[in-house]
Picture 1 (cartoon, one colour):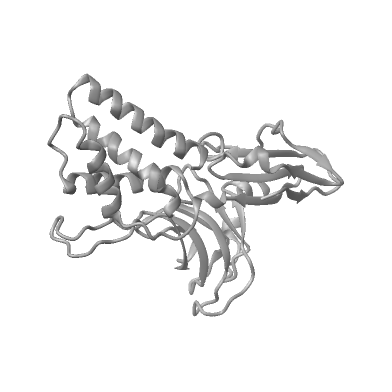
Picture 2 (cartoon, one colour):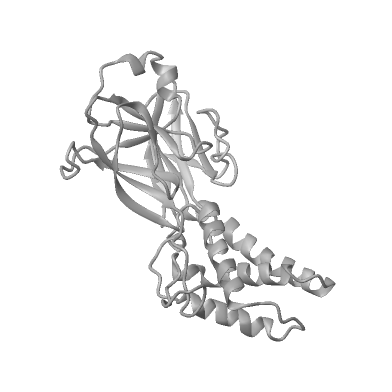
Length: 293
């Protein structure tokens, strides 16, 4: 990834922040944050070294001056994305092999498949880039908008797509929810416009966002990137399915999902040894989804 640079204009004061999704950005309530100690300023730019962000789930970087938000960048590590080729049954079968060495017989393929699907959802909830799609979103009149069913959170707006959804237009900026309320409290009473300049978003309320300007009576469509609920996996001969599906996240998460399945499986047992094994496997899952894989 190298270094990321964000231009700083010749105004003051400003603050710069790098926040993990698991900490301050997920708990965002204000625009201003503490200055991140790993940042240095060079040549009118903020310089962020790869080593400072490589362990984060994702980072939202911006600077703030006396006139409001002036720059931003959303960083998602490469380990969080990628295609899937691993069959769900291969993870279930590997879990079965490990579990067969233990004095227990209660781990069915159906229960392990359920654990795998639960693990995918937990992964996508923790690691925002693990299950992503880009789609065409139809807006509604006014400023207040909502992501469709199956969404977990907004990741970034991409561009305007016109009233018909097939006319690529202006790129859309991502701004913190509430910034327009502070800069111009009457902004929602202004005439609406189909072209969106900015999407206003608070990750504490991940399914809702606002458009600036407000949308008119005949709203337009925009292209968005979102985190989504992973498609449940299936196995031939399990729960009435005849299809062996691949997992719904990148192959890079295979070992993490296996850890979740084993943690859940051992957790259903009541022996002290199984409790320890469950904690150990879940610890692996927690570690992977806290550091981005």
